[in-house]
Image (cartoon, rainbow, N blue to C red; front, side):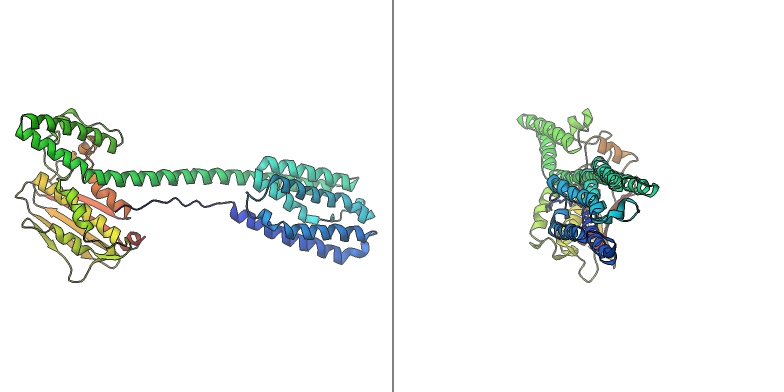
Length: 417
């Protein structure tokens, strides 16, 4: 059952823009209150009232402009900074004593909001440009700047550049994370497609190769061509790993040993079709895992299950049943037609455990790694890959001469997600 992967992008800038919008409103209120409580000190209060009125209207009207980077255009930044610089330069006109005292300017700390907008929008270079203009305006406004003036100017300059640099680093990290999520989603989709190919096309080609070789004549040539296509497809599925020449020639493990490391029998392709008829249409609807595993029961396969339904989301139950089917197909292919297999289902509050055990010859040491290198991804993709996508694990334990046991663990919380 195919499930579409989606990459969710999370912007690290959105909280910064929200904070900037709040800062502009709060500093606007602060500048107005500062004038209200000190208006008796202004020789020309009308100038201050006029500027503050324009600043209030501008701040409230342009709040949508500082909601995100797309709306915060260069034109808005230039106009906003121009208003801040105008307020600084108008301060001596409204208060003649401003040049002799280290008092606040008309826009006060509202000016820093304009500089911060440059920093968030364009990084540290834009922040350095805007803060430098503010510094020049403050020095001109003071006439004879004091030590405190230079201190405040330097503080704004350093702080704005630092914030701009942090924003650039955050953006680079966000791009890297988004790219990593895209690669992960693409890899998971490729593995899912590889499992489907492994459960159908590859097994059919392997069967045609074996049957053609056994029949001889023209069928042998058809089997040889099927074997070549199987090798090419395995190489593509395995990401370019080329199988050994021996596996091309006979379609069997290069050491001739038995074990479930190789591909499942052709029955696995039919397993997916059989399971599809037992699954609900909604992939998130609960499905009884016992019902799906019951389709594997035969004279050679025994199912031990709890008395109550073992419920998992339909997509998770299908993947678990397909993984168990792949393990059983490997038993039929490599352990022999007389091998017995047992399926044990355990239903725990936090997880479901499905164990597939057989009494075959087991897997020789190192066979799994060798099979993976040859492009035979039965265990890696059809079993472990499926459980990994569900947030679970697949453990394989095998002792030569004592059979093989595959334990599938599916956490309920992760499987539901």
